[in-house]
Image (cartoon, rainbow, N blue to C red; front, side):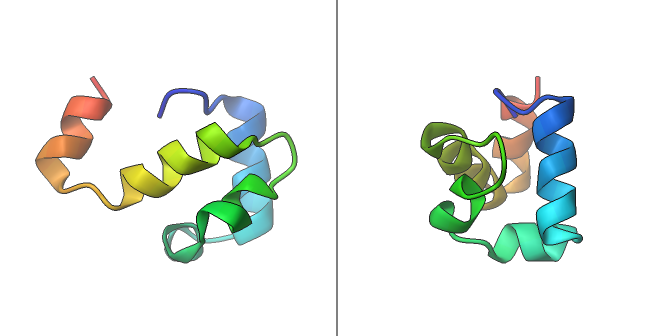
Amino acid sequence: IEGIGTKRRQALWKRFQSLDAMKAASVEDLAEVEGMNYPTAQRIYDFFRLDLPEKREVLK
């Protein structure tokens, strides 16, 4: 996902500790993660709500 590097990825795992918890998080919850900003939190939130073919396209 654009804007998610090593530091943000580590901060997300530290805060949520599971992929299911990340998927269930609101944009506001994601934006509260250390080093995160609202636009990137919105991209993460939207990504988790895409269908598999759309996710593959985003990840190219």
